[in-house]
Length: 340
Image (tube, rainbow, N blue to C red):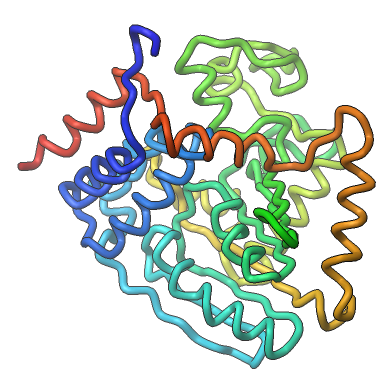
């Protein structure tokens, strides 16, 4: 453990997150759902979506942008189409409410979609996708953010970083899941790099003059993030906007920015989930067939499946706990105490 970090257990992560959220306006149900996602991010080595986000959650509660006592409502619009209205709350609770009905609908209909509306999403997508893939379903999810990357040919931020996640079940193990931003680097990772004083690779973003820079703070404060793969990443970001906003009647990234109070917390938007039962198309042998595909792929030297590092981190942190910057730990404790 380095001198500027503290080692804590995963239970402690969840406990201090829960206490902090309750102290600042969340009821127990919402606080539990959010603190579980924060713990999962820390557990799996994704600190950009872990305790690092907690001050942003608190800011959104304090400003009144997010209702910490929201009671999400569920609606089955059609047999294969579901909607959860988050009632202006954080995403984890409405996601947990819609999860089992979505799984049931996919098994009944072969394919099902769910839209989350009036939701404030601040966590990683792989968390909800893993639950769906663990139920032996193929799952895709996406959500928009606030303007961060330009469209192809442009130089001004317009699309969000707009992550897209995909999950596939495994026969004797944890699901294969990738969760990637449409930007060359997720904004949370960029923010962590700026906090820790680390440079980022060239190609992540531009400064105010449109020149590539490795300074993450300059990208965040003055510049623009870049999509991965040039126009290809920009096109995926556009697709996410249309699925998570246009299809759901929710806010596009530029609209979210226009309505946001800039408190540092997550903006209001939508999330789109698509779930497919592979047995309906792939037949009874679908799982063995895809396992043979993975085996062939992994036989290539140097290849690993997406998510492997995350699962390795999980196994380690369950035993050893996780390291948290002392300054962040102190900030969270002070946020939990200041309203008592």
